[in-house]
Image 1: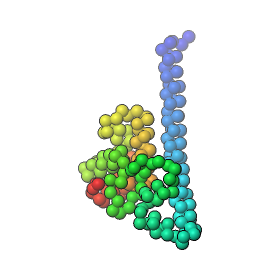
Image 2: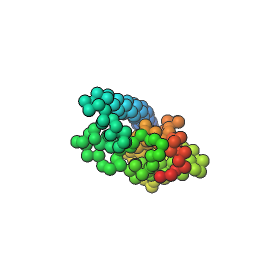
Image 3: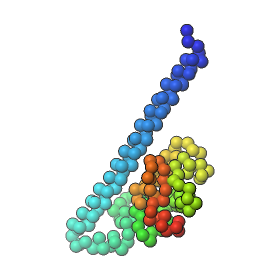
Image 4: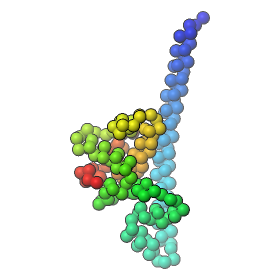
Length: 178
């Protein structure tokens, strides 16, 4: 007859295996979600461009969009959405400063700029959470991962290894200027 401790160890091992399997599945789903979100954004941009090209006013909307920038274009295309100021992440381009981003995104960029300046290499989201004084619980880490992935998709950060983030070439060339 097996001992109580032996049975508990078996149940603990089975639970640990299940948790590991679910974590792997969650990581896979998170990666799929990020890819699908990026594809969706590309289709939104394509639809907007086609709509502008086919507009009856001869493309004056395109001229207005080029002057006002992509962030304002997002606000025009979805007037029903009440996006908070700086809550959207614009695609990085030369001359765009960090001040267009919300404080949370600026904080991530600053942490990675400091690492870049000190030649310390990439950061994981768990390390960022600890550096920001947050509890490194899955909800906080995943919130940071979502923000970091959005910054990667918009050209502000690079993710050369899965889950390890650094400044992208363009923003790093600014010397961390915000």
